[in-house]
Image (cartoon, rainbow, N blue to C red; front, side, top):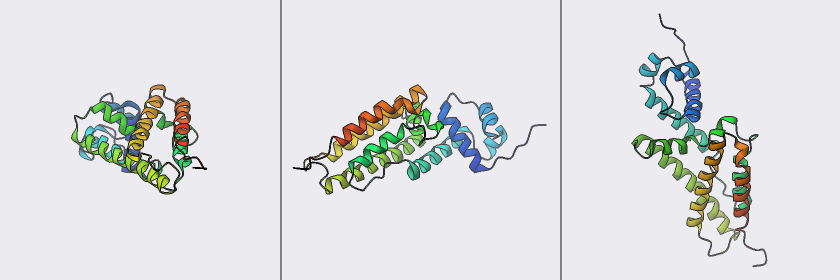
Length: 200
């Protein structure tokens, strides 16, 4: 007779998110999901609809959490706030150790290389969120005169997005948040360097 374990849905999704974050989708088997989340293979099929639906729920949980706690939403007209966002990302004290696997959404986007429409939709949400956050922050800085009048917000949004992606790749490759510190400090210095001189 098979074991029966009841795992609360919130706990199960959180555990699944951490597991997919660490291993990716394709390298993670149903036995490992059962062992590390408590979701039996029977429950995986009957409650969650299988591995892929569970994965998509985990991505949704990640995006919801990212939107509330980690998305760039600085709108105080201060370049230092944008710079600090990058510095914080590489701080192991500020970010839990699970984040040493980089960004779950970016990892998944690379893993599926655009071949899964459901993953693509979540990638679109993520990139819209990040671009929108950086755009709002830089628009506010420009409005307050913190950068020059000819500062190209759209171009710099793409620079910041690329920097954020690169930082997460460095962290993922090393498996340590702190490994991104040098890159994060360099990005922060770049951002602070955009400031309009006070006497202009």
